[in-house]
Amino acid sequence: MSPFPYRLVATDLDGTLLRGDDSVSERTRDALAAVVAAGAAHIVVTGRSVPWTRHILDDLGYDGLAVCGQGAQVYHAGEHRLLTSLTLDRQLAGLALSKVEAEVGPLALAASRDGLEGEVLVGPGYRVLGGGLPSVPYEDPSELWSAPLNKIYIQHPTLSSDELARVTRETVGSLVDVVMAGEGIVEILPLGLSKATGLSLAARRLGVKAAETIAFGDMPNDIPMFAWAARGVAMANAHDELKAVADEVTSSNEDDGIAVVLERLLAR
Image (cartoon, helix red, strand yellow):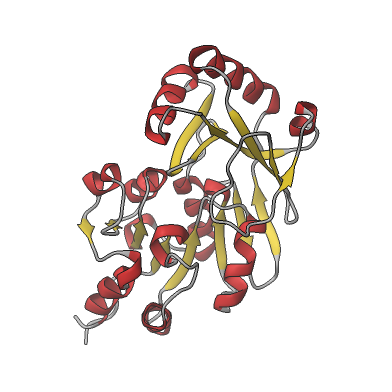
């Protein structure tokens, strides 16, 4: 049996590592454990902020590094502490939102506050997806800007997420970064931030290079991570934009797509 060909396996969470019920199959757990036993590291790279990720990592018994908040946060799961955290310029974000609303009309907003216990604030009309995730409603717009933020979520009453992301990027792409992380999930981030940013920081801490990394994902926000890693694997359920740049398309998250690839690589 040849050695496992990568030193780092980077996996997105929703739609990739997690099944629809937020669980990870035994087959996928076993494949990841075998990869780690073979000498590689596993890093979770997710758009979720730490407070929305921590319970999943704890359930997995995961004690390594995790990249959260679309790359804004590098979190040490075993030590329950933030190693790095990047915040959004709130004045710049407010300007960006006003420009987008001038183009498409009023937006429904939510925002992720910085820190290990950072709350997700949800404004009027914003639909929180993936029920059960903790959030705090607000009515007074000033509450949105009262503490440091990692990101702002935006929704539009009629535009699809793809359309909203495109218009927002065209309108304010020189001020902030804009990602579509799933249907109903369009995010405004600090300019230059991506999953690749956080993953490169975490990999450097582990002494691993991009050329030694395989990445798995399902949404357009995974495109920078695929560009950074040596190999990008899209799930069968992935967005067409990600499939177009992937080196390979595997089975869906419901059908152990990560395990299918890892088992093949382990058996070489």
